[in-house]
Image 1 (tube, one colour):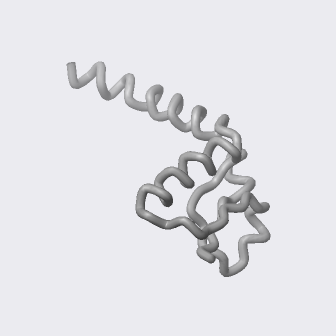
Image 2 (tube, helix red, strand yellow):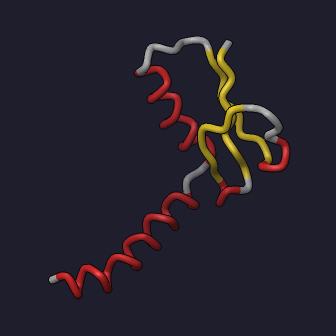
Length: 75
């Protein structure tokens, strides 16, 4: 059983990584927004920006294979 798990684990991780890369920025932001709102935060914004343009903003996620970062601003 352990040998099978060791063989299948890399394939499983690659599958998960592919799924994460395939997620659109909008889908990722919806999931993040749900978590933020579940914590009681109402006044905030999420924006998908090119990774190079993040600056000092708080990164809360990434999308499009890491080429874009999702930044959070509390209002």
